[in-house]
Image 1 (spheres, rainbow over the protein chains, first blue to last red):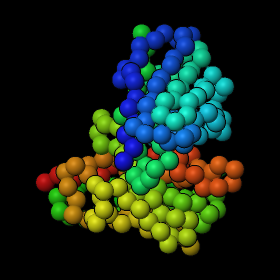
Image 2: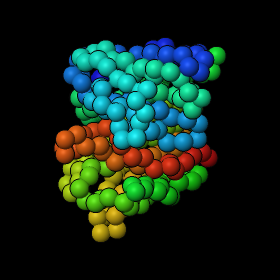
Image 3: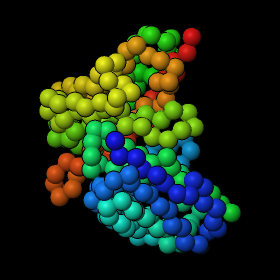
Image 4: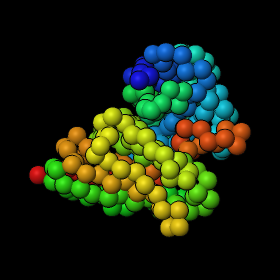
Length: 108
Length: 123
């Protein structure tokens, strides 16, 4: 089973700042990594698939990079609605499909 | 627009059964693999099961294998999850989710999600 480890667990930033979230896989998953945003009481929303492709309707301030075992989600300039929990997910080696434990992005 | 609407959640005693449904609209249901993903209260996301577009193939997480069954009725555009021998640790919000597409090929990320159905297993 592929284990995804996200860091940091919590990230405290202010609106307008740049956010960098990390996801590390226990073995190479090529580029088969997705990122999701989840706000309280809501379903997750797909942001990025295959490491660097923005999903439909996702603003350009969200970008993804990486391959192999190390991946990054970058939010270039935080807006108030960006404060949420972010999960990474791999589809390279399945079953099972696995998620990271999440990074909470909170307002400083 | 794509819509996924779950139903069937509730409170159930340990060892009992429950069936969740997910009604799909806004896309050709028979063309997409579908998944169930769950989230225990205050916890992260856990993939539960997937069923192929034609319903012929299923895969499960080890934590539910032998107890849960995923199925679909293409004529009713509905996805199901039968939950048997329920345990306290199955308490979670259960989401149905559609597989994404990459260059026209099904890819196992999740591009649309339902709002979730809460299952509480408690005596």
